[in-house]
Figure 1 (tube, rainbow, N blue to C red):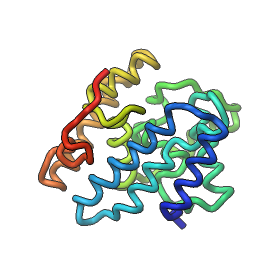
Figure 2 (cartoon, one colour):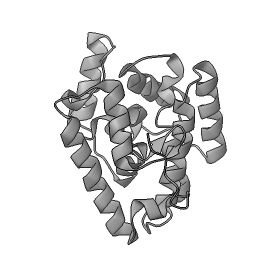
Figure 3 (cartoon, rainbow, N blue to C red):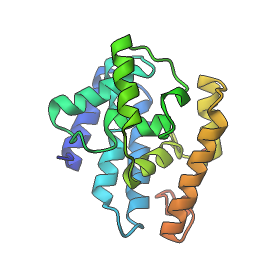
Length: 203
């Protein structure tokens, strides 16, 4: 039930046509990073990784929202059969935003109804994350709309836009743990695995 690359690219175009913005280019870089890293991990499928990375932000089709885009993405996936409910990357890859640490670690505003908030809270509490979720979490921190970047550059980029939150440093530590995990799987650094020849963007 994971869409193929052609269907995923059409979905991204549809979403970006409704709400144009730099998030589309960011998603393309995330997808490329996911594919490249997955190709170096024997237990992962590069096409699946690409698709999941590409679709991670498509809930932004509904306009300028904060955490509501997570719910919009999840419902879009469920309504159109883009992903099975069992895929842990559901909820527009909620784990990518919340890092499996609970709804209280989110740095955005929960611009949803009280009923939707409770649904999201329950969903997160029962979510089980796999290496594809971890890969999307990692690659989301490797991509600006203008290209690949060091993790620290993306950390600063997000903090400038969202401010400092009590969970900011724990979130950084979690991403760094995921980095170490994939570097051990690949036998090289994440930057060596990126399809950019070592050319990284900086703020």
